[in-house]
Each structure stands twice: as structure tokens, then as C-alpha cells.
Image (cartoon, rainbow over the protein chains, first blue to last red):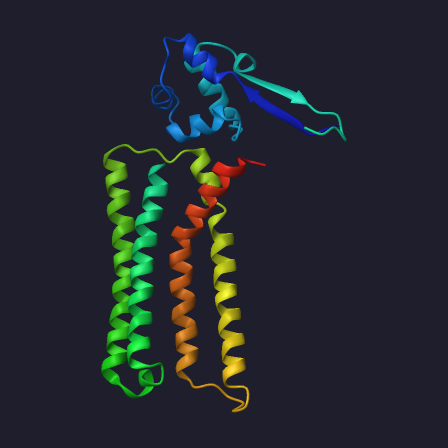
Length: 77
Length: 150
């Protein structure tokens, strides 16, 4: 099985939810704004718990927020 | 900057001032005076204890303020801070290696080292360990911001 990559639509979802700020989302899910920034930049993959909390904050499913893309072994990202 | 990073900066500032003060005493008085001059020993012990107390006070005060303001330490903070002991360990090992090389070179012909250096090695290992509790956190945050989880 190749190494996968997790991407997310948090920035888009924040925009769709009345231009929710990063701080507002952080407050809703109980993390720091810096964690939201790292998530949006794709530098941090959250725990399952935080992923569910973020999805719940937007009223959508986890799959609507996070996408897992598997890369074939040997492919260059 | 996360609250934990701010705390690490405070700790690093205290650590640098603390280490600089102790080094300054040894530079001014000379390492050999530590054995002979009781006043110098008291000054070094005083600085050493004052530094530890200042660091603990900083941890207590910032911790109390963070709790009062409801500041969160989240899962990413915890993941980043788990790397800190590795930086501390390497910093202490490099410090001891530095001492071993320097003392071996300087006192090679005598075949023995003055007793004072065993204490200085101990103090420096403690100081470096405490300084790198903060410096390591800052390095870990910087590394995470640069490279993420890769």
C-alpha cells in the first residue's frame, strides 16, 4: 500500500459558514488558531477526535472535510 | 505564536541571562578561584539556585495565567512538545562531549583534571538541560512550521 496524503476543505467550509474566522473555529473545536492554520496549510493531520469535532462544527461529515488520497508506490509527489 | 511558544521564549530569556551570569563570574574570577575563594562559590551557588527558582517561578506564573485565561494546549502542541526531550538529550550530550574534548586537550600532559571541573560539568549539564527545555520547544515549533509532519 502506498503512502497517502490527507487534504482538507476547512478554508472553503469556513468561507461557506459566514466567513468564520480561524479563531472562531478554534474556539468551537477547542484547539489553538495555530493548529487551524497548520491544518489549512496541510502541515498537520489531526487526530480522529479533532477531525470529528471540526466536521461537527461545520455540520458535515468527516469525509466532507477531509479527503484521503493514496499515492502509488514509487510516484513522486 | 502559540501560548506555549511565548512561554518557551520567556524560559529561554531566563536561561540565557542565568547562564551568562554564571559564565561571567567564572570569566571575571577565573575557574581556579572556585576552589580557593569561598565568596565566589557562594556567588555561583546563589546564582545557580536563583536561576532554577526564576525558571520554576516563570513556569508557575505563566501556567497560572494560562489557566486563568482559559488558554488551550491542544493535541498539536502536545505532539510538538514530545520532541523536546530529544533536543535536551542531544544538547547535554554535546555539552559533555565539549567538556571532555576541551579538558582532555588542556590537561592531557598532566594526566588529571582539577576537581572544580567535575562540578562545572555537572552545573553546565543542568543549565543546558533547562535552557533546552525552552530552546528545544522553540526549535520543535519552528521545525513543525517549516516541514509540518513530514
